[in-house]
Image (cartoon, rainbow, N blue to C red):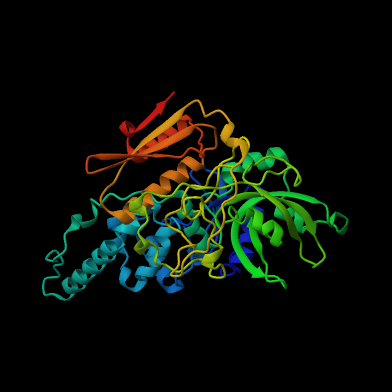
Length: 473
């Protein structure tokens, strides 16, 4: 069935989700092992699983993929990137196909995805030059191809590049395969979902009529938001919520939408509470409350989050970086809330839990749907909760962030750093020291916390260096 419906991402997702439920391993696409269609193979742990077929990769044509598979089957797996470029003429394959294969991990055996994407033009040029020289050599009197102008060491020392952020990598997989292969954005809170016996989209969609209007508590990824006016010209929203099984619509009527629109942002993992509605045939959730506190609470007892994000540093406020069109065009800039300093609230991928009032969202400098040509509308800030009276965390994590001089790259690095801190929930404070031209600017995040642990420290040290990470008691 997977091979028959390889070009129907919805059916492929349904089948693969069922495979995961049955504990059948899903193996990522790989130019050294994948066939055109899905295939049963053994993974690195010698466990049998279903290997993604290359034909399931969007933007990759059958003819181009057949060219790669034929070269591999003729002389065996490709040992490295250079051999891949020499044995496969990438001119008929095309840059778009190679880029898609890199993004879904089919070339992970040759380097990390960030490195390969950065070197994509170099890869295409190397293969083209090699095969041009080979053609000239075959037509020469002596059959000599060694006189080509390119050098064999062109690919031996690829330039270093930052590893692609885990979330960006998952977004690539979802866009090009229709399925998260490496992991799922809700995996970090999966243990909470399982321990608390939350509802799933599968449970809700298979509900009997007797469950109509019964309470629902579900955690999922906000995969999309449709904003629309009611008859009274009040804004409401329908959220497409995704978990490991499927998606379901969550309806936020105007009163609920006004309360929680600050945190219901595309790409966030949130907990929704409300009632199941089966009146329209397809199951949907009528939302009554939203929270970032991933615990079993009733809708009436849910705490309304108050978000007052600290403004980003001045060097990150350059409008030129954010000229791209918003991802959610239905939302007008006037809807963007501001804090007391006039800085707009910034969307993020997920938010950490907190003891009382959920903390501020770290800014996502790569995706600012509130930025537009027309001015933002003034919205009065909500009052801060009593969480300000709580005792500060016992430890403070200090990260030294040295700017590289490339503003666009600095923005991405800083955003990844905040998202990393955000992905480890806890009660520890953190501070970022920005270093530029010998001067240091300290950025405090008094309303944000993280969870200091060995895994977080190890990842921070890998990203910014061991000397740039410290814990203050």
